[in-house]
Image 1: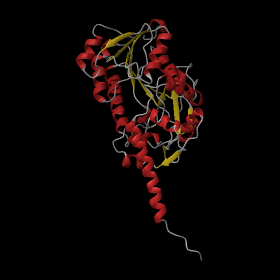
Image 2: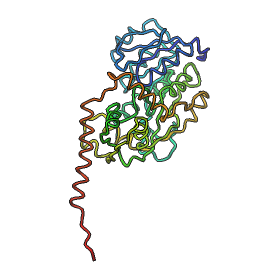
Image 3: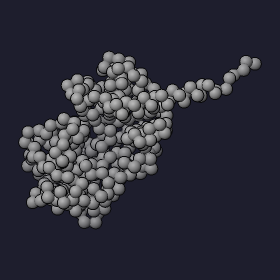
Image 4: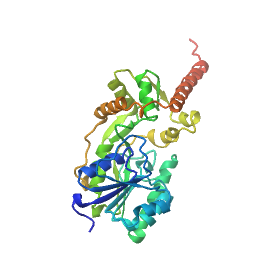
Length: 352
């Protein structure tokens, strides 16, 4: 059996310093687990590893490097935050399957079909996303590991985060650049009419669900989304940041379809059309049934103040990006230009 005392579990995190994984590493350590982290040794976001975590340097995209990094090792769980597509998943089955009793693949809630035809979203909601290449790649990766489970018992648990943030990474299309624009009174584009519903999950809350699945034999072969129930409109998200900054939010509503026209190469453009523009509300009954401690502790209106404190303490990591700022300027200008053209050519009503 897989289940053992939590303090006796050995866990390898692949990644370990990202928005979600850093909180999971910290909670695993606090729970008494023996934790190792495998990555290239970079930490651009300034999230330090806790004391006692073993750092293993390797390139997970290079099969020989990955195999060398885990040679002779054995883990109760491997949590893979860097698996992206079917090639990554196939590599994990070959290299990591033999060294772990549980492989946790971090997928994405963006795999659920958009627009969602019935809410709340459950793990049985159809998975397809014709609008977002990222989601399709994640789904192909899921198919590989689930097929390996069905065919030869590969011990996989699939986890689908939705929009998860932490103090160092605001949940905005444009990241810290958007916060900077709000702070200095610049106009901020918000897709649609700003009223679509979006679920936000702080990484510390997500970590409770994920860490609670480690070592649980009943989680093998299962799929979970871990999202929480903090649901906001996009106008509310931007306004909450403005309120915490003590300034008004100058929101400009932009049709979602305009983003890829004005900024076709911008990372967020396709993500907006294929995911963020659609309301996403989740049923977390399954993860709560497996991990009763899971719940919403940090709601966004409180967490935003922690984010702004991080911004003040780390100006070198939260400075606006000039290229992103230029894209946002272009999107706002395009919306204003479109409205001006329509106003100029709108039919004039002639009095009777």
